[in-house]
Figure (cartoon, rainbow over the protein chains, first blue to last red):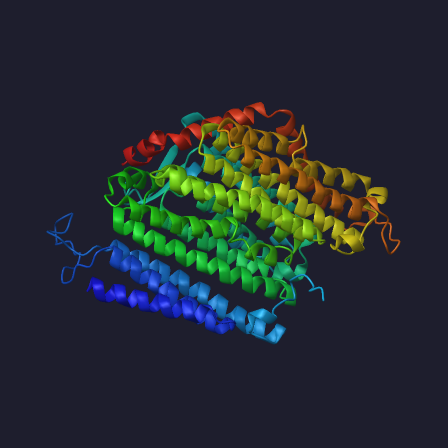
Length: 119
Length: 497
């Protein structure tokens, strides 16, 4: 399972980098969300995968019995997903506003705030 | 529950909520000022407690460390929180004269307070994942502030700022995941103990480099700084002042924290990389500034070159160098925020920030000229201002370890800084205005609100400059804590209740 997820993370990162090298802002953002999902999966795998042992505490006890799955990485991933979602929503709106006011999504053509080119 | 640890966080959040509810009235600005004022009192209290106790820690929700959420304040955290509060208070007052009613309606004051809360949280947290969360709080607030005006320039700068910062965030998150996988903990104190037990120290160095790149983007070091000069000259002056003062310094703080406490296993490699990074950052930043002619762009590139000095202090890793880094950090926040505030006044008086197209400030507004000279000379390192001592300690530290060439670079960059400051001085202040305008301070609307914070921050620079001894002694105590984190670790882990 770890190997499979590692390969998946690799594929996600590779396609993310491919997309992010594009000059189109929207493609860049799609790459970004793939990359953030790869990061989330990394945390998930790094916390070790323990199938079939939910971390449930039996009635009347303080701690679960035996080896159970690590619940912390899931909490971390959940937080990261929520934050990532918020940032991505902002970035999408920003891309939309960019297209509206600058009339382009090509990052090479965004030079309003840059110094004037001397010809 | 230790209220003095939580108050510096609760106050700005509460102020943000109230300011948001009052955003349609003129009350938002005042809520922001009062909130920042209370925050300043809270952080002075925190400082007093920390000076007394050394390190204080609190476990939120009473879950013992390393499982719960830990807030820790050692001397470095406390001084960063205090300086954040001072800058926040100054900028909150300045906003009265800078932020329009329209920007207030769009939620400027609420976002500003959330930014302060995010920065403060990043300084106070004792846990790597919470550091990530506070970074995000800070980041999303800064996104909002940056593009608040919604003009073409802001959006252009905003795209670059958002894109590069999001990449750094994801890298940071991946680093957290890998470090957790190796150590099984995220608490700084616990990490400091457990990293030594890792068998594969090479892998730890790889993760350290991921953190270095992630924090390096935030701190705007060479070659990762390109988002900074693309964005910092676009928003309102109050916004760029607080960005310039605080945001990059959170990155520097995170670097200092991680690379003194956790990643000190292979100093020969990681800190040599930092040394090269520091030298290039200093040189490239100052050369970039020399090529610019916009008031704020010159200052933006100088942020980068000054960050180099702080990283240099961290890279040398000797006690004196770290003293210099801490001293530099504090001095730089005050001076840089002040220069951006002055740029705002200059723009309102002369109608622009392009230094070749403005002028005449010395003749008609001599008071502003003096106020500019103080932080500008301090930045360049003139005695007896704060920047002189900061540079002196760093250069002395490089000479002590006999790195002559590095010392030469540090001094040469100081000289180039004077060149840029003289350029601003000669063009914006000395020469007559090309359009014949004679800008006078009298005509400035809301001038008290703009001049008081500038004068206050300038006075602080002079106080540190004339009386550096208590600040150096403080920085020495801070360095002792950084190099020997035993007190930090026992306070965090031993206080399990």
